[in-house]
Every structure is written in C-alpha cells, then in structure tokens.
Length: 342
Image 1 (cartoon, rainbow, N blue to C red):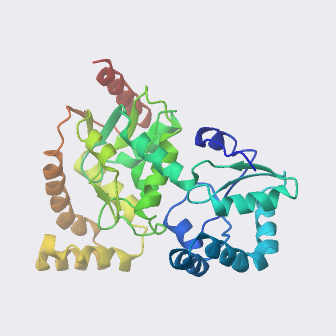
Image 2: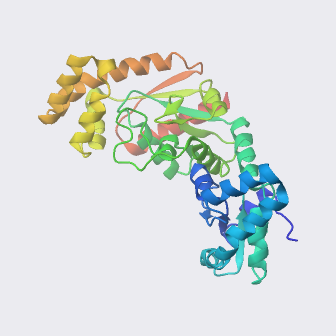
Image 3: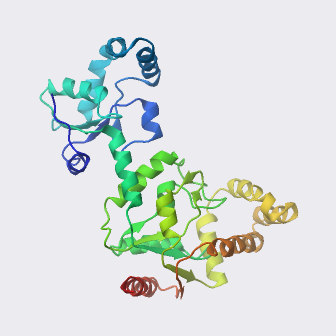
C-alpha cells in the first residue's frame, strides 16, 4: 500500500513529481487542480456503467466491471502517465483518493515509480479552496469608471512585486458586454474557483492584496461569495482619468478587435440603451466613428458604475492619475500604506 500524502505536502512536491488527474475527461473539464494532466482510468461512458452497476449490484460487481473496462487500456494509460514524468516520480489523484488513483499508483509502482498519492483526492483541494476564500484578506480594491485602466494598473503593480488577484484574467473576461471578445472560453464556475485558490495560495495573508472592484459575475462565472462580500467592505482607491484619456484607453484595447464582434456586443445592449441609441452606436462603429460609438456607450457605463459604487461600504480614496506610470504606481503604493496603517 502507498501511504497517501496530505495536500500541503502534495502541492510542495509538484516540481519533482508532476500531477496526473485520473478521473474521467468530463470530471476533469468541470474542474481540476491547476497544472494537472488528465489520464482517465475510465472514460465518461465507462464511469457511468460502473456507477450504475455499483448501485444495482454492489461494490464487487462494480470493481470487476471496472477492471474489465480499464484492463485492456492499462498499457496506453501507463505510456500516457510515463510521458508526464521521465524522472520516475508522479503525483496522482482522483475524486476522493480512492480506487482509481490507487489502481494507477499500483500499476506505476510496479515500474519503480515514486508515487505521491493525494489523501482525500480532488475533494481535498476543493475544501482547501473554500478555506482560502473564507480566510480574512487585506484587500485593496481598485475602482474607477470604464476606461480608467484598472487592469493595466494591476499588471503594473504585479510587476512591482505586489500581491495582485486579477479576477478578469482568471475568468478570461473583461467584465462587460464586450468582455469575451478575443479571449479563450471561460472556465466553469468550479474551475474558476480552483484557479482563484491556486493564486491565493501564493500570497501572504498578512500583506495587502490588490483586486479590481467587480460585479458578482464576470461574464458567466461567479466570484466566490466570501471574496465578493469581503471586498465590498474593504478600502477602495478610485482612480480617475480625463475623458479623453479614458476614450483613448478604451479604443486602444477594443479598436483592434473584429468589428463584427463589437457590433454584436453593442446589439446585446439594446434593452439598456434603447433601440434608437443602439442603432446610432452601431452606425458610428461601422462608419469608423469610434468617438460617436463611445458617445452612446459611456453615459450608460458611467451610470452603471455610479449605481454599483453605492453598494460598496468601504472607505473611498480618490486618485487622479497623471499618465506617468512610475508616479501613478508610487501614488497607489503610498495610499496602500496609509490605508493599512489605520
């Protein structure tokens, strides 16, 4: 028998022992520990067969069926796992650290692989993720109107060595009707949580963490309630730019995207803009009048921003940005120090 490894130790050894998720491809797609590779012991269909047999005839019948289905694939499974690590070390997990990962561990152990078997399986990582979400964090919330360059500021802060949780980057979405354009598909809600936890585990909870003020949903994924609720009460730095700077930043980001996608996203705002205003915006966009397009959109987004700000209970400090990256980041860092000295 291989002694299972606690999650904390399991994660520390990943550099030497790459991680393999032996659950079905459907389970893996729904959510997995970030950085793991999927080598299923049973496919989606086979897992259903075994599960059905377990309910109808019990564990022994299900185990026999599992070996019948997986046995012919052992050679291919072995080769797939071996590709992950040439150093004869491997980290394995299934749903609860039970039969599936133990079978693969037994098989690889016959070839003298050193095995890290995750105690509690993927379920233990999910529990760990929710524990991280519940932990009290020292959030510094960056807010500002559309076009204020909040995401750009977070990237610059990260480059300065600050702890930054970029939720939009994790979500593959910019947080607006236009937010999905040109980005990969969004993760499932479950895997979005997994990815957030993967970032949080790198942070020191005694030090502030920068985050952008977001709605509860970013596209189709939902921010974990503990993080969202904490952030709504934390100190806010509201960054401001001139109208001209905001417009230029918006167009620098969105102007390079396919025009047809921008038009479709504008059309989705019909209920909020009204039919006439939506048509006006689309006509301006198609004709190359991006300022006219923004003339329609910005009042709507500014109104939405003003409404969302009213739901925030944390103190608000305003900062007019200069456009000088060094000075702006220095000013943000200075405000962070003031906020968390109080």
